[in-house]
Amino acid sequence: MSKYILKRVLLMIPTLIGAGVLVFFLLRLIPGDVCELRFAGTGLYVDQEQIDICRSNLGIDRPIFIQFIDFIVGFFTFNLGDSMWTGQPIVHEIGLRFQLSLQVAIMATVVAVIIAIPLGAISALKQDTWLDYAVRTFSIAGIAIPSFWLGIMIILGLLIMTQAITGVPWMPPIDYKPIWVDPMYNLSQLIWPAVATGYRYSAVATRMTRSALLEVMREDYIRTARAKGMVERIVINRHALKNAMLPVVTIIGIEFAFLMGGLVVTEQVFNLNGLGKLFVESVTQNDYALTQALVMMVVLIFVMTNFFIDLCYAWLDPRIRYS
Amino acid sequence: MTTTSEVAVESQVEDLTEKGSWFAAAGKMARRQPVGVAGLSVVLLMIFAAIFAPYLTPYHPEYNSFADMLTPPNGDFLLGTDQFGRDILTRIIYGARTALVVGFAAASIGATLGLVLGVGSAYFGGLFDLIFQRVMDVFMAFPLIILALAVVSTLGTGTENVIIAITIPFVPQCARVVRSNALAIREIPYVDAARALGFGHARIILRHMAPNVMAPFLIMFTAFVGQAILLEASLSYLGMGVQEPTPAWGLMLQGGAEEYAESAPWVAIWPGVAISLAVFGFNLFGDAVRDTLDPRLRSR
Image (cartoon, rainbow over all chains, first blue to last red; front, side):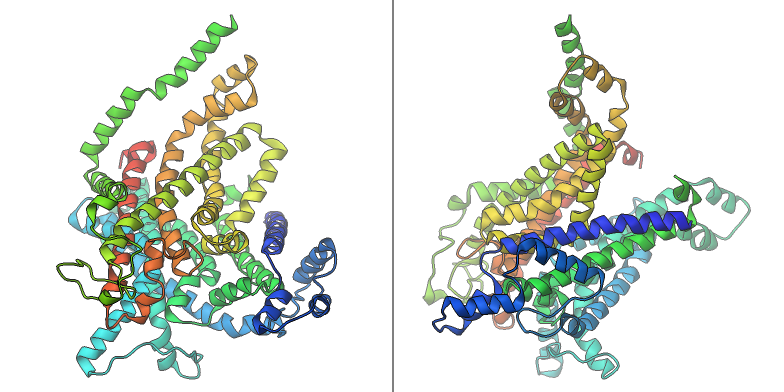
């Protein structure tokens, strides 16, 4: 087992370095740099000297290869440096938004699980009935409906509903308060984006639950369990669902990893100051250091999630360890 | 001597791709997959709207009419007008063009590149395969939207660049699926036979192996079209995709849609319905294609 873990950890390193290469050079291809942008914003006349000073302060006038080594070494020693635009430490900039994005990602995953597992199970157990078709339509619709439009519709619905009931239109609050400061306020803000993305992410998990359960229900041990007179409810809960969960957990895990950085559009709709918004800002400001750090963080979360999923698989299925 | 055996090998391949079997498969699909046919009709409706857009509506999609700003749906403007007085139904009909062009272009380029690279990787194996797999891993580690946004900010916005930005994440997805299928194909003797006949690598990959991984290729392709339409809408909504005044569904939801959500909900509702319906149609059709082509699922 320890040999397997070591092998998997070593395989993570080329992926991380590759992602680093990709984002590093992609960013340098964007026309202009942070210094030009900063002075362009002031609207005043600037001479080349000022831009040069700015560049040398940020270290982006050094040879590109040196900058790259600097960035990779910084990443592996957890020394991320400062944002090139605001000058604040990157750890601080990310820390401000991390909480919010993590909470939305967790809540969306919870929403997805609550929707996906019961619906997927019903759909599989009542295969080819109207219930099955209804669930499948519901889940295909989840993939088809853009989550940002669903978000707009939720806001619109809230406005109309509150107008009709209380006479005063109500919208989810815009400024973020941590859940331990004001739980009600926090939830009233973040439950909506969680529902909008959770529904979308439940769709894939619902389909996965359905097909995994259908496969398991045909296994011999299910027939054996039934033959020995076990109650159907226990056959399904204890024997079938438990074994069907492995691929579902994988899907949910990977989606959770993507949710951490991939909420760009939802954050835009609900005006949330999260990691996705920070990413868009840092890209448009040519803030190399911050964009690199954000992308590497998202990739690291993804790679780590995959690593833990593989570990679970290897732990559950010894054949994988030895192959 | 070489020529006769060459013909023999090739005719085998051609048998699989003969036109008659395609028509038969299509007919079988229509009978077995009523839901898929429903999806297909949405797709066809969309293609019809895109081609005959100028004949379906009396208005021009980019014509601003300040006298008709934010008109609610009525007899003249069936779905109302936006904040520039442009007819929303007209812009949705013309928007089908943008969606289809981006969807089909990104899906066909992405899936084809993925097909060639995936089969090539399986065929060559060894170090090439190993390095190729690691590169694909890197691309797969990014959320779709992040990768697309990074490419768009490098290349700039606009329809062509959006297509490129959406294509890039598709290539590794398709390559990975195709590769795992092609690995099994490589072990079948006819590949060795083709090699023994002295055919070039390109010929074996394109003419002997690629036709036999058409099923996963088509499954990925149909899935990609819907995904591409959705991704284009997301990019345009963020202002990083197709630019005004081009009619595009995602763009129609940007800016005005939220601002006037309460006073003019039709601006926000209809373009979203169009996106959802289009992607829904492509997904239903794609599912039916997958059920028909994937033998493992056929028995279900």
